[in-house]
Amino acid sequence: MANADLTTKAEARDFNFFYSNGHHALKNINLPLYENKITALIGPSGCGKSTLLRSFNRMHDLYPGNRYEGEIVMHPDNTNILDANVDPIEVRMRISMVFQKPNPFPKSIFENVAYGLRVRGEKNKRLLADKVEEALKGAALWDEVKDRLQDLAFNLSGGQQQRLCIARALATDPEIMLFDEPTSALDPIATANIEELMNDLRGKLTMLVVTHNMQQAARVSDYTAYMYLGDLIEHDKTGDIFIKPKDKRTEDYITGRIS
Amino acid sequence: MNTATQVQEPSQRTTISPRLAKNYRRNITERIIEFLLMLCALSAVFTTIAIVVILVYESYSFFEHVSVFDFLTDPQWTPLFEDAHYGIMPLVSGTLTISFVALAFAVPVGTIAAIYLSEFASHKTRETVKPILELLAGVPTIAFGYFALLLVTPLLQMVFPDLPTFNMLGPGIVIGIMVVPYIASVSEDAMRAVPMSMREGAYAMGATRFQTAMRVVTPAAISGIVAAYILAISRAIGETMVVAIAAGQQPNLTFNPMDSAATITAYIVQVAMGDLPHGSIGYQSIFAAGLVLMLMTLFFNVLGHFTRKKFREAY
Ligand SMILES: Nc1ncnc2c1ncn2[C@@H]1O[C@H](COP(=O)(O)OP(=O)(O)OP(=O)(O)O)[C@@H](O)[C@H]1O
Ligand SMILES: [Mg+2]
Image (cartoon, rainbow over all chains, first blue to last red; front, side, top):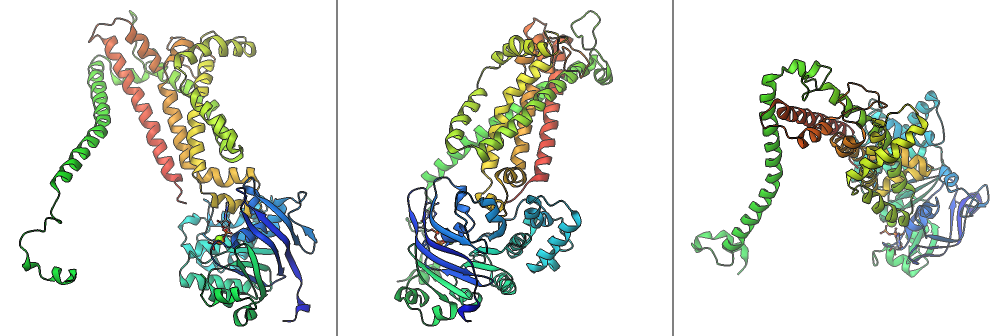
């Protein structure tokens, strides 16, 4: 993969983040997300992976007192999405997120997937039904639920719920998808399903995946970024990071000397 | 010597090691505590049973004089008059009308207050407003009664000049004000119990605060919100003072809130405060009315129980 083929979809530039208690959780982060590629974010617990991921859709805005510094630029708009004049809701409409624990809404399977479209004011029944079907197929869940779309989403298994959450995120045709440890609450088979799904989505949208699972990062991602104590230590092609890391700390982590 | 071998050779010991023997002192203390706890729990059950027994027993004597059919169909309730009639419906209609007015006011106001406090208010606002709201629930009901009679009704009379001094609208609204804190407080607790992850899920889909509150948090908390409504209904049906003071004490078979009327509870205090001879039919009528009141409350509680079950959500 030559660097010339790559388009940057979004990038953090000299990005710093402070929690409301003053904790400086991210320090001068520079990280590009390449278009239609999967970037994995790895690092020991508490190093700031979730914090960085959640900055990309301005999730931190929900809690008063959190502060961003620097830029996260989104392309092709070439706009800093952290700018005070940018509407975080518009950002979230283009950048979807899947959480660590499946968090379906207390609604039917159909309404869960239709939620994002309804929020956008879509009322056309035909179009909603088509979009829901397409998203559920995209999340490899359609065959399992097509006969019970009106069932409560809580009745699905954990793995199905997580795929439902992915379908929910897909239904609005996002440009970027953020995954925060999407398989850490799932068994190996459900995990394999989700990984396969991400693989299928590769090339269709830009993804950023936080994971604690080295094998998963190696299997799924095109690029890998290693973080340590709020710093971004290294970012490179996944193969390079795992085979010949440049930084000693990355190597220690990958080989299991830090966990 | 390791423990595994000891276990395999039980024959070695015939007496139990003192370190493993039952501790009788601890055992007995536990038993006593358990018994005391059970006694407390049972006292509530016994009281309820005692009330039911007395109600049923005294009502039984009442129904020896008055047929159940008359009780349910006679359009008049005049047990203390020369020409006595024993139709409970005027009291039921008064009770239902006032409760309906109260809930028509309290449900929207209380629910919106809960949504505001839980989803929109800042931490500081919430911590200030909630105790004040709960304080409202502690105001003596007699104060609310005069509030209805001397302030709310005169204000309403400016809008509806035909409104009599004693009417059901004023006290209905005041009871509504009284139960707003119950609805707001209990619903707010239910909404705050909805996990943050569910809200984050909605926001991450591009939902606004309002959309998140209405389409995700409220449905997720619905069973708690319904519980709040049930509490409010029971409270409204049972409210006595406000009605006795401000609704007039004329049993009146009407569902028009602009009329004056009496409710079951208002009748009970009115009669109980007079000097009716024990065992007279007027005295017994109190218990028959009380029984109906209890059945109504029970009905709404059971209704609420099933509604809640139907809506129960597991996060
Ligand atoms: N709401 C918060 N307020 C203050 N500090 C926080 C908050 N959330 C996280 N932190 C701190 O910020 C740092 C980064 O946390 P973050 O959740 O991003 O770590 P992480 O890399 O995702 O860890 P994990 O792998 O365990 O999920 C940690 O030191 C954490 O204690
Ligand atoms: Mg995390």
